[in-house]
Length: 84
Image (cartoon, rainbow, N blue to C red; front, side, top):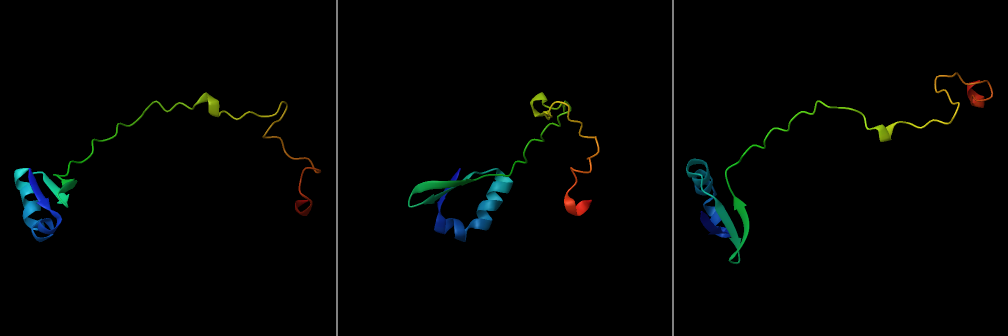
């Protein structure tokens, strides 16, 4: 593990990245003597498994008014006046 202050990290960034890549080092950045960040080798995230059980949630079923048929055509009175 390498610990450096911000100024040193700015001036030695290429060397620090090389140490991370080649030697697997971890670099701790400090500001005013306090650790503020950690730089380590990139690890790609694990692939997210694909869900195959896509069943609809029964709570999301539409609740229609009794006797309402959504496929029933509108009557002449139900059409807006400018569309008749």
